[in-house]
Image 1 (tube, rainbow, N blue to C red):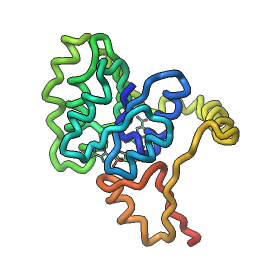
Image 2 (tube, helix red, strand yellow):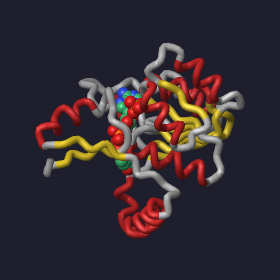
Image 3 (spheres, rainbow, N blue to C red):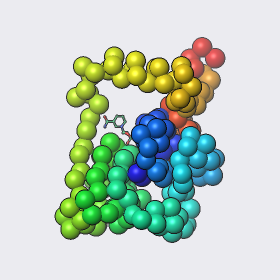
Image 4 (tube, helix red, strand yellow):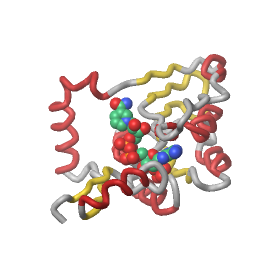
Amino acid sequence: MLISGASGAVGSVAVQLAKQAGSRVVGIAGGAANCSMVARLGADAVVDRKASDCKEQLEAATPHGIDRLFENSGGPMFETSIARLNNHARIALCGLIDGYNSTERPPGPSNFGLLLTKRIRTQGFIVLDYMDRAAEVEGFLGELISSGQLEAVQSVLPGFEQLPAAFVNSFSNSQPGKLIIDLTA
Ligand SMILES: NC(=O)c1ccc[n+]([C@@H]2O[C@H](COP(=O)([O-])OP(=O)(O)OC[C@H]3O[C@@H](n4cnc5c(N)ncnc54)[C@H](OP(=O)(O)O)[C@@H]3O)[C@@H](O)[C@H]2O)c1
């Protein structure tokens, strides 16, 4: 299972849950520090999306291709990932953060046709559709956190004045996990 945005709030949880479900997990993160953090969470291999050889890194990390893709980022790395998908692979389409700041609509993966030829099922989903199960999930994840089976990765920045830069930076040089601004500091 390949998870992009693996150092982020969603991805860091996805990595750990996928490991607990028995998958061989490969994460994609940006830069050495974020990649080490994802490895520490249990990923079997991590690809540095900011490295010039990221394509080769992904090939080496997925010698038998990819069966499941949890997609958080979109963009060039998504195209590289699509190329590594096996026939009948499945994509859970969670986010496309790479395009959120674009002033024009991103053109989309140039290898979109591979979804057809490889018979890949892609499912977009929005968390708001499942709000009736929020308490159930909070209970489930809360128990994993309190029993030490799940790490809630957080980056806490002190002071309200950090907010604008932290938001802008979250699209490039990301702080790992859930970004929290401590208004009391
Ligand atoms: N479908 C839903 O209901 C739902 C709900 C919540 C969030 N989302 C989406 O899920 C994704 C992750 O959310 P999040 O809360 O985990 O965000 P987050 O904490 O900001 O993490 C996203 C991670 O993506 C990586 N990233 C940032 N810019 C990127 C780029 N241009 N290309 C590739 N990777 C990039 C960063 O890690 P590195 O720098 O280490 O790569 C960052 O830590 C977002 O796309 C968000 O919109 C969807």
